[in-house]
Length: 237
Image (tube, rainbow, N blue to C red; front, side, top):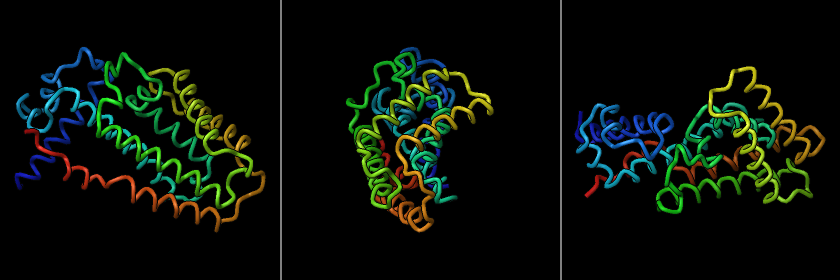
């Protein structure tokens, strides 16, 4: 195994450990020593890759955004009809419901996140900007292909869906949802979005495929592949 590969695997273990521990312990109580122990590395090994405790957890949150986008787009790759707004909204809810850190970010859970704020991290701000641009291009693709009601303002739609997902996540609570309850809540999200923002006609397959192709293009341009992200992680100086 090359030294570079060992570095990549060590970083993955540290990020995995931090992601597991942050919802359990909360940022204020969690120490770098605990993360190192869970990852099976020394504390000094952690600081080979990040200068501060904050930087470790911003890397964790940055990965959560990438996972969210990747998982949503993967569903569209498997079935282009998942690009429809009501289905994407339900998928986003399901993805968030299964990832405690995404839940914490969505509802701004300070017990979990402590003092972590997007504005404090250049890397995190850049990821958030890319995610916002991806959402803008997604809604634009729906609009130009006639998959949204023409009178719908995409900015208002985006805000409304975000607030609905935030409210549903908050009301669902922090504990994992049973499969039947998750399915019911996802259906509520889908029906609400479909009735509020989509035309009443059944969309043609070519319009669905055209919108999906635009989403794939935007994702490939804005969200780096995991291998690229790993290669770009610097060793702290």
